[in-house]
Image (cartoon, rainbow, N blue to C red):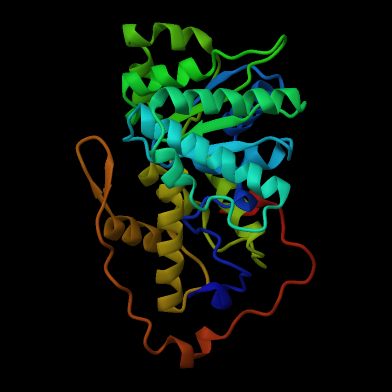
Length: 328
């Protein structure tokens, strides 16, 4: 809506986890480095913990871009499954990946779901063991199983995941597992029934909310990636208000910045100041007793903006944009 008005090549505050916009705060750099090390060294079990909106999915996508292309990855986000459903999801993705690798002439997943539905748990486990053993014998890296929202997995399913990692080669696990989730995941893994799984976790990565300095750089970084020709779309006081209201969570910062730019566009303003930012914050967020809760934002009227002089797109910037530190 507002990209042309502000001279942007794309929406800088979209809600999809686009690796192009990955921002490496100190917390994110540490988590990414730890996970990349664990995967490359075949360490087995890893966890990634962070509150909703701290950038777990974006970090995972960034991690996947850095991995060996020969590595098969299985990604799960639907975690209300039983043990058999878990095995079927894993095997289906493994066989699809294998079919794509050999260049099958048809959809490699066609008929797989129906076939797997007929197998017993023992047959599913045997087929899984056969697959990962074959990967090892072919000198390919072990598959990586990524389970998002892992705090919702039952104890039985988590134990099934642990059992799947029992297969080992001389120097490595034949399956690697990354459990990603909210802080409840840590409490879940402390249950006595999961003691054996907990002892196998080689890396615990934690994502912290952004500091104010992080938020200033984060907003500047996203504007730069989107081709912002000017560095003063947000005054520093506006960024401070947005950071404070968001509690440092990137997803909430994105929502507030996006709505602030919509409002500025509607009003013909070339810059988001503290007053406008506060109005957007009050419009989009309700302050609860402990956390911020979203409610439906009021629509902004933009009916006659296109015809007014303020609607003209700014002249393209000469040269590259300035560094993100210029946001204020």
